Length: 483
Image (cartoon, rainbow, N blue to C red; front, side, top):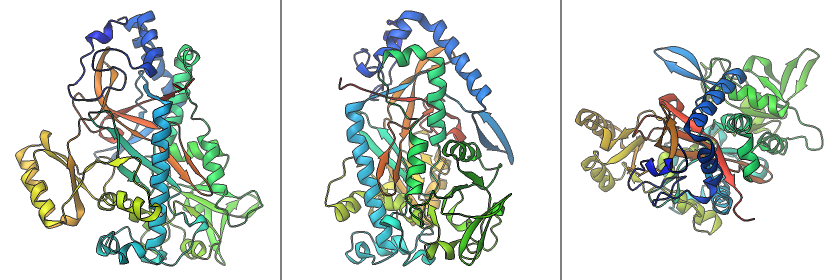
């Protein structure tokens, strides 16, 4: 394969490639992987991919794919080629992500209290108050540090010039961080010489940072807090992550039947009796966590939990109601939200966005469905999306009908030339589109991962990176370029 192999690597025109410059030269952060390929050739790269797959299987790193009503556990798909980003660039990106979460938390706290931003007309009141994610029972509740969204997974993409843009914010129960950690563990086993050949920033402090953030939320400061990870159970698609994070933090993994509320205090049932719970890291959707407060038909919730939380006797991360800012329509207002609360300009721009609830913007969207990406406001996992240039007339008409029936529920964005990276496909390096999900924590302090989960569309030409839709992943290396 050799160094010349990158000369045969066919980049996609108008797309920023993460490892190879437009002239075919290797980007400096990717120098170590380029040297490895030059030294060992394609056969060794293929062998390392096989070793990597075997390691993932042996470690039991999996995800659940819902197919035809069945739950199928699949080995986590990890590509042997890492994605590299210089640390000088990441410092600016990290600062922008922290800025964004800080502003969003001020926004959420305001919405459940004085609603100044609505009264000042910065964000239309009906957008918030009519949102299914605005939970009226949360109004007036005050939280430690005023923080509602303690864990955020922000999806970033690069445009054709290589500039990072925010694609969306995930503020309810963001997932994927366990795969970021396991990707690194596997890559260090498979490529020890590459880690010796580069200064790659570690990611393995995340479980400690997560525990530290959760502990800072405890209503009983001074004691070692009792923290639990609340999971819907083994049939949830992210159960691997729930159990992984609980184990890494050294805390209990609990289902709703393991918890109960007495006198507005939450307790964990243990072999030695009841133990008071201070902090719940919930991986259950808002409206299912307490059948007395929200959905009475929920079999996943803990009766009385919201009352205990409202009285300040237990902290919940992310707080119920934080999903009000996890709405693709609200997303369009985040630059104004940052400016309103922080008096700053966004350090990372949004992708240009059209709101279908606005008549003029809706007319433009309907006239250009063949060119735009249209998304439902509150779906996740890549579901319900129309990618205009790759859609049929029938699909466009179906989307047009859905938009006209419920314009509030849709936004549209230009079809971006998402960045690509060399990906091993049937033994050959080919460009595949990818995004990046860093994880940001906010409690007493703000923290951002050094990198994140890079998700890659394994299907040729596809822009959908979600694992549920056939996507895979790459280890993300933040390379020190300042030594």
